[in-house]
Amino acid sequence: LHRIVICRLRWDQRTKTYVERRTKEGMSKKEIMRCLKRYVARDVFHALTRQNTRATTPDQPLRAAA
Image (tube, rainbow, N blue to C red; front, side, top):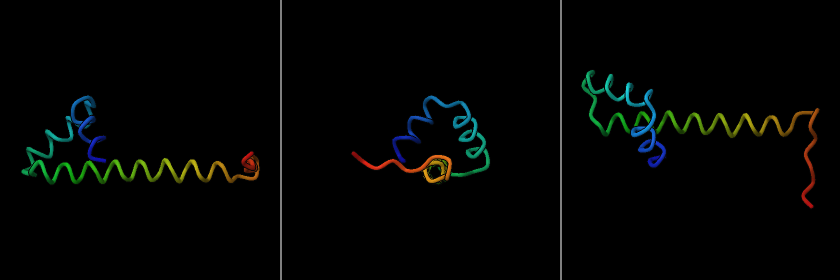
C-alpha cells in the first residue's frame, strides 16, 4: 500500500489535489498518508471481491484446474 501511495503522490493529479487540500486543513503528512493507504486498501478490496463474485455467477461456471 505504501508503494502505491508514493507512486500516486508523484503521478496522480487527483492525489496531489487531495494532499494540497488536506494540508490546508492542517493535517500532517503522516495523517494524509494513512488516509490515502485506507483509500487504496478499500479500492483493492472492492476490486478483489467484485472479481470473485463475477467468477461464481451461474452464467460462468468455475473451471477445474488442469
